[in-house]
Amino acid sequence: MSDDVAVIRTAFESLESASAHEARTPPRVDEIFAPDGHAAALDPERPVVVGGRGMGKSFWAGALASPETLGHLAKAYPRLGLDECVVRLGFAAGDMQKGGPPSREVLNDLCGAGHSPETLWRAIVWRCAMETMDRAVPGTWRETVARCAEDPERLQSELHRADAELQETGRKLVVVFDALDRMGDDWAEIRRRSKALLRVALAMRGYPRIKLKLFVRSDQFADDALFDFPDASKLKTAAVDLQWARRDLYGLAFTRVRGDRAAHAAFDRLVACAVKGQLPYPGLESESAQEMTFEALAGPYMGKGPRRGKTYPWLHNHLGDALGRVSPRSFLIALRQAAEHRPAPTNRVFDPKGLETGVRAASETRVDQLGEEHLWIKRALEPLADLRVPCEAEDFRQRWEQAGTTREVRRAMDGREYPGPLEMAGNTSADSDALLEALRRIAVVERRPDGRINIPDIFRIAAKLLKRGGVPPRR
Image (cartoon, rainbow, N blue to C red; front, top):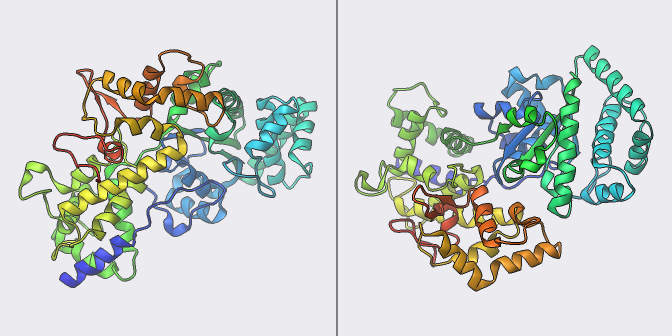
């Protein structure tokens, strides 16, 4: 068994960390793990998918937009009818590619030419429909939008004809929009364009065979102003919350390890021994089988006894944000770093010290990852180092006041260096309260029932805050 442990440890050390994807660059088929709980997020009939950073919005958007991965998903989720779908990108982050959707800069140019955002989105859908039907389209986006803007009646008539032809041929067009938070240079413009897109998505529900699918950031979805139009509740109440359950994350990790050629047989033997014939193998989606397997890998407890908790829930609990959500990247990084920890245990893949090391590494990556999406986040966290949580909200405000944090964030927003927190957009007073509320809304902090503020380990450790009995930061 010791030889098997060494081989399995090497497989965990080789885990890819579910790196960030962009919808323009689809994942490989062998990267796809399809949890049952994600079926709704891929359903063409559910137009809005909501998720935090690292939860897989762009991953699934790219997987839908690639014919190869779409075919794989059609087999994994046969009830969704993805085999009859033609998927095109309507917007995604990055520069425009030949034949691809317009970039933010092109959107700026088109809006600068006097076109409304709603006209732009309708023109994009129209062009995707015409290309799907092999109809001629103008050579540039400026020509496309101008054509659609001059005759809205013809545009809608042609869309209805395309919808009818898709019905006759048994096909469905799905136009995917990702990275809505990058549609403009500030929140006012992002909100205006996103709101217009939602209005178009609502209007397009009248087309049985032309569907829009929007992948929206959680904090952006929470902006009430985005849904300030008639019947917006029809979209909001039908939105899908993209999350990874604990069993999904363990299933993802175990599937990746079992897919390692060198470790496949060894992992099968370990699982068979761990479950002792109690469940049909592989049983990788059963939490009871997963827990028995992880105990064989890491031991049952985070210490000599149950006082510090059982290993299977401990890892997941320490990687969750304030809403308990764990990103697949955080989970895989934690397992990889735990396996790399030295000295390695002799009869296990992981030990408690290794799991703590894994959580530290995941925390550092998660804060970096969040900082890519919220460029103000590190500025907000840096002055809080050595603060012991949970603590009073006033402790946060004092640290920010001493460091000039809110003034710096406000200056960057006013200079259009980056869109700051939504709570500070248009607000000219109580910036510290707005910043704290922004951290709460993106689940970096939580307010306890007694009013004190806490930061979960996945952010606290990298930010070097302290907590009694918690995993200490790296020094």
